[in-house]
Length: 362
Image (tube, rainbow, N blue to C red; front, side, top):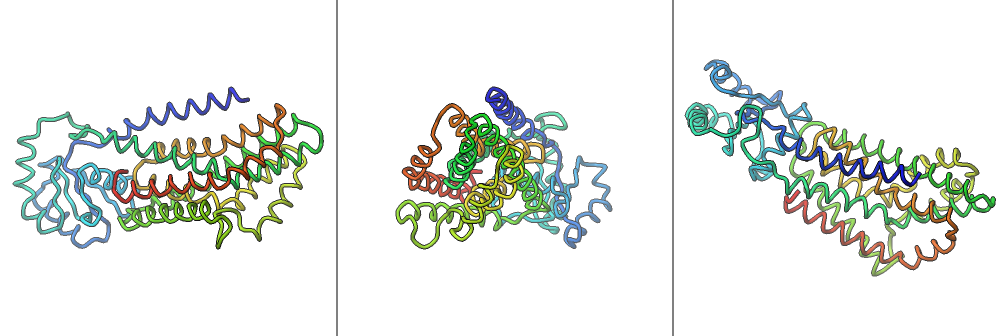
């Protein structure tokens, strides 16, 4: 079982690295016309292009970004590469090489002359390739952020507490093998539920073109979550906790204590995942918001698989350790002793992620 899980993990890592450059290179070396359905200024440009028969004369590729999610992602990715700030983005917009023209009047007045100059001096890659090198550094930072966010979630004290209670309950039957299978079943259900919730939220966030303020909001959420975790390091128990609310805990424990088999653990895991949301959803939401801006569907799915595999890895390891004789009570003792340190690590990482997002490094 451990060998199988390790193989899956290595496969996911390999596929992430394999797909990142592929998606970075899928842009084409054409003249891009970005527009939105219902935009009156865009209609003026479209009518001008049609009247002058410019679609036939120039390699113009139209990309509607209001309702086409892939085009919206491509729009933001292209402008990120060109260094265009969020408050300077809008439609209608024409991009040719490293040159950007925005607004109906500038496009109508200057398109032909600028397009002629662009085509005359353009002698770069053949049709279908990007004239600029993909921003590999940003791609690597995106992957690093996904891994960092997953690690913060993986060391979450809530997750450890739930699994320790579960393993203690099953070990009470005197069957270590059953406890191990129960731990794996519970981990699998958490993986599935979080992956599906993440996929649904990713789809919701990635519909249409997100405004730059939205991603600024995501960055500040990351910083605020980081500060809240730092509060739990310096003043644990004061005010609020970045953990499962105290009023929920009796019901959560009752659910866990009701588990008597691996099958029961699998189904209970889906309910428990809802209880864990208040203390585990922060990093996940930040990462999902970032992915909604940066990557395409298939690559996002791979990133989500990687994130959730890292997220459940401590559960799998604890299950394996208990099966091999490790005492859950000792695990709980370690958890309590390291509780504030875990909050410190989570706080620092979340603040750094927020700063990276605010600075536009991802």
